[in-house]
Image (cartoon, rainbow, N blue to C red; front, top):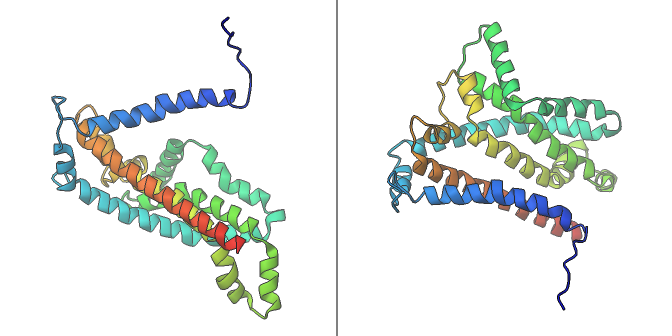
Length: 266
């Protein structure tokens, strides 16, 4: 006698829609990109796309290098500005919820609207579009991604460590350098990752705030997938390179988190 299948509404059942969505809109596109990276214009197997990119025939490595430099500068500026902001927000956490909300509010506005609004302000002030305006736009857009993980980490630090350091005679600078800063390292790594990866892959900010004068890695990927260029193979290779950078960044974050957990246990 056949047993009837009965659907039970369990916690696992709520994961099925997300798994289907993940399969259709994440896994399948990645597989398509991987396949296109090894195909030429005639849909024949080739490694010419990798040769063209890594030989810098189309300037891909040069654009990637420029994007990495701009991403590093943007991340450094965000860290220099974001850490003091996150530190004071965490120090006065009980009365700073309004200020934390002020940093979160820009993230509720569409990314393109923020960028176009920034361009409108520059145009109204007669500011010439170029590298300076691009850097300003990148810092403005990605600064919250640096502040939020830092704020979360600083708030979660056990205050007894700070009190113990002060009881042992450490001054404020020593407490910060030898206690607070090392304990906030996971937040720093997370903030750097959340800022650096979008900074090197963006194309809207560089295109809008430079008047299409500055060409970054995201612009190159967008160009290769456009109808006019129609070079999906090289664009797929560049997308895979970006995917590798994202995976490496996530591995670094995970390793840092594990080291922090091991240190806290000891």
